[in-house]
Image (tube, rainbow, N blue to C red; front, side, top):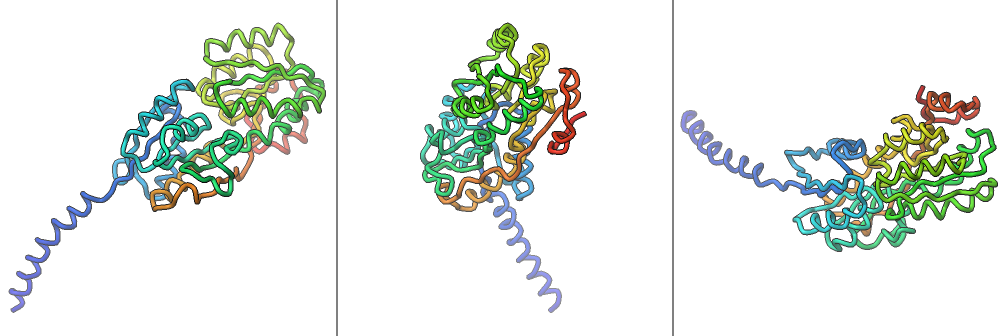
Length: 325
């Protein structure tokens, strides 16, 4: 009798095993489109890490469809359109230009952004609390902190800065908002801010040559698709011109730039994975409020300050959240 029961159990296992294998083989793999600058993006790795922390592992239960912008804003709409024609569950378009292009390309595939400077002002969403449509994500407050950036930069310059410059990409909606947001606080500090629009890296050298010729005291560099793709080059040019520069992302300071006061971009990318998870679980983007940045990072490169002959007050060192020697 025991033999018969063991034989019966073996038969049942033989039938059950294929069904388990079949169930694993047919388990849904989430398909995520990614519209990012390049494969070496630190933010992108933070995003993938955020997904891994939530149980989504590439090659197992999530597949990525990448499109690389290489810092060229003009190429983004074409790449977004390519993604919109694929059978995707969600598109991760972290920056303002990428998210705007994805929104234009599709009204049905959910879109998640990570570092939009002003998602309401750029018309990505109707409001932070109720985004509406198929787009949601996280904002950086990069526009709101402009007055503080100017104050810090002016303090580093000994309170004597009068002729400032803003390097920005006019094709980037977030950079256009930055330009407008810079005017009023600069006037309050007794500064003039000369705009330097750049649309491609071959325009960088002429812009800095003009800054030197015009005796620019300080420089603001907008964080955007173009500038972040050429972080090292811009930091080198600012150093050569010997102009104290404030950057829109900590990545520039890590590369040798003087100072930044902004959101921790990598943290925003990591948190964006939470939006993707909720959407894959059935949540609608229109019901997911846009999150504001949880922490601002004040990064300061002391070696660069010393090279520029700047005196960094102890009080500023105490305020900095990250000091690079």
